[in-house]
Amino acid sequence: MASSTSVVTPERFATGIGSYKDWMAAIGQRQAEFQRHYDEFNLRDEDAADFKKLVDEKGLKALVIGEDWCPDVWRGLPVMARLQEATGMDVRYFMRDQNKDIMAEFLKNGEFESIPTVVFYDGNHNYLGHWIERAKLADEQMGEVRRNALPNPMPEQGTPEYAAAQDAARKAAIDAAEPWRQAQIQEIREIVDRALA
Image (tube, rainbow, N blue to C red; front, top):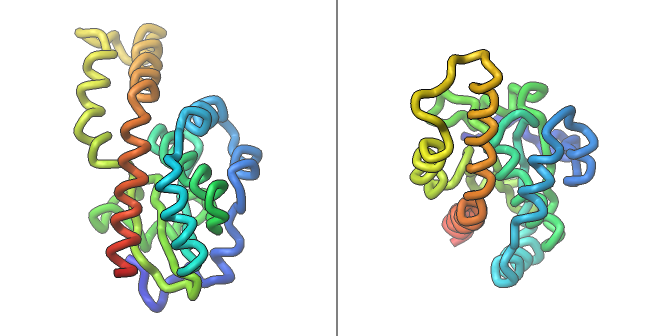
């Protein structure tokens, strides 16, 4: 959890990748998966308006930690990109493995380097809270989505059939993702509202 000794100073925050376009240019793989989530996410007008008010009145900004190989990041980072574009929020994107000191402050359950992690600050760079990995709704539904997509029994690991089964499961999770992306917006709104109440 962030503290007065956080490595995320305003100066360090400013070094992050400043836009979704620049993130897409910086990553080495999975652009298609990121782009599909970005294209398919519909930020509701009322959510955009509510966050825009927080940006204008409180200087709300966010730091996002991710990596390009992670399916949760493919889904979660484009949500923040759309929010950034709709509200003018200052969002900075950081590669986890190049910023282990930042990641160390926001471990899931104090132990896991789970991503994406989204950290919120006000305009004075006061820490407001953070959101990790995926929405609770995704946690609740993902197992069933994967089970329905995977053959039983599973093919042997290392075979083309195994790789195809994993691809099918990833595709099924992307197909199911819109309610999960909407749930992410609601969860981060609750975190920010609680901190600013």
